[in-house]
Amino acid sequence: MTLSSCILITIPVCISAILMQTYFDSRKYKRIPHLIVLLSFLFPTLSHAQYIDNENCRISFKSYENHQGKLEYNKEGIIYQFIPNSNAWKVIIKNNTDETVWLNWKQAGFIVNGRASGISLYPFTTDEAPLETIKHNQEINRTITATNLITEKGISKIYHKKKFRKNGRTSVTIVFPMTVGNKPQFFHTFNFTVTKDN
Image 1 (tube, one colour):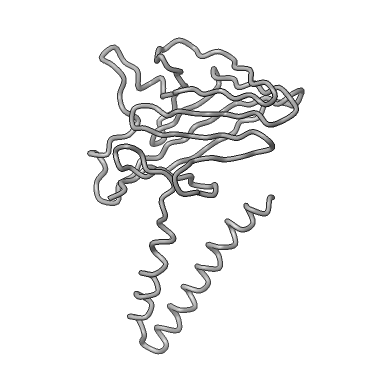
Image 2: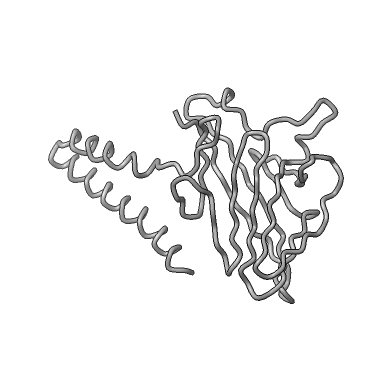
């Protein structure tokens, strides 16, 4: 487990412990209004958006550290960057390892609200996507969507801001089957939450 993972686990646990202690103290001393004030100060930091798209939807990692304005994750020298849009997501993968990296698009997954699908590369077709090679110090830049969103009538959106009800959200999961050098293939999963920004 990396240091950043430990920090990401520790911070919510500490905040929960403080809130529980404050709650029980407030019940003991009848100071409920103080708890409401404390929660109102903490809420903006807990609801901090990572990325806001051109339709004012906020997209954030569910299990990785979020940074304002970008969705980026670095694992063992491979940098994954996502630029979401309701129609399609741009994906940039940089190989900073000393090995060649392969991405098997045929086995990749694009899951929207639990509905699994394959991935289609732009220009969007239902044809199978190829095996992609990313050499040392190179990157790929692809636009992707779920294959089950491609129909004879056109391409459906991944998420619809107008369909979000109060506190509504869309869950998006993208799965990349990766091979680094001679190592066995592994599946790297990214889970996102899409909500209204306002």
